[in-house]
Image 1 (cartoon, rainbow, N blue to C red):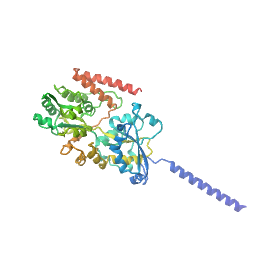
Image 2 (image 1 turned 60 degrees about the horizontal axis):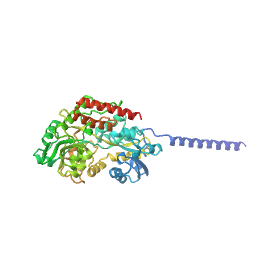
Image 3 (image 1 turned 90 degrees about the horizontal axis):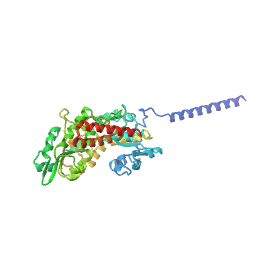
Amino acid sequence: MSVMLSRKKLLMIAICFAVTACGDKQNTDSAPNDAGKSTDTAADPKKITDTPTDLYIAYPGSGEKDELFMQRFGEQIKKKFPNYTLKYVPRILAEGTNYYASYLASGAPIDIMISSLGTTTIYLTNLKLESDISDLIKKYNYDLARIEPSLIDIQRQLANGGIYGLPWTSGSFVFLYNKDIFDKFGVAYPKDGMTWDETYELAKKLTRTDGGTSYKGFAFQFENAMGTNQLSAPYFDSKTHKSKFLEDNFIKAFENMARFYKIPGNEPPTVGVPVAFQKDKTVAMFMGTSGQIKPTAEQVPNWNTASTPEMPQKPGVGFQAAPEYFYITSMSKSRDAAFQVLAYIASDEFQEWMGRTTAILPVSKNPDKLMQTFGADLPGFQGKNVKSLIPRTYAPLTITPYLTTGNSEMTTALKDYLGGKDLNTALREAGERADKRIATEQGK
């Protein structure tokens, strides 16, 4: 009897140990890893990339179809990570500004959001998709020092010391010119390091009519220039979102550039600045976003480039960058896999391919080697001064919420100023309109 009891006790003890062990294992498996800490398995990129993974990626710039996404990123990502399956998330234009509202409301995932700095508010933070990736940067020992510092600094500001994503292009304001017009009028070509005043004198010389054709000395995308101005004067306060159009540096930047359009005969082209420069070929010097480099090479046979005009008090300082980023979202369940994509997109391997085949500017802190092959696979780039497309120093980036509103109001303010309104009135009224538009937007 006692032997049977002892055996029953032993059996009960064994069962208790088994249950306890199972319970402990279940608790261990369900407990999340500490942020920034990883096991050896998680920190090995190869083990991550060897694992079949679906990644849902949204790229508003590609709209409802994935062609642009695949051309710029998708095909290269697939080659690099054959075990990943890319799921493109379309931007539904019919939903207005709530492009991803119905998709997100359904509970469907987005792992990576691709967005410019200027639209990060729209496509990331307003949708509550932001997520600090500092833990992943630490886990995979990613070297942020290899990236242009201003592109990281602005992320630190945006994420309150953290970082939401890695850049895929620096963007930039670039200065291009048509050598044929300079040759026609016997004027020396622009040089790197020219000041705004020197550029102004060149513009006056080249603004003339010849053989019934009116030529403009200098035309540029004014609103984009103001949005990334060299004095780093922002459109709006980053916290209150109130306009800052009457701040001293903002007024200086506006007046410095608007004066070019007051040169008789050098008014803003009615057909649009890029069209006048590239198609009509009636503009000698052109300044615009870096997206205009490739179209210029395709349409202006005898083009070249120099550095953007400089402020005398800020030699070597160009415009602010206009970066775009790959962001890992807060809803991603494949953060480690997504981070491998971010690291690849910002790598010299991808950046060299991108510059060589698409003429998009790189994010590297030291871009000289990358610029040696910039545009090499494209017609029209041989022998061009492409190193000047990137300034020696970018102006410090500023957080500019509601960029589209700011740009729109700059177009109107310029028109009012050229139409006879004094500078302060044109900017004050623009600021008042912008504040009302933003208040309406925030009230939705």
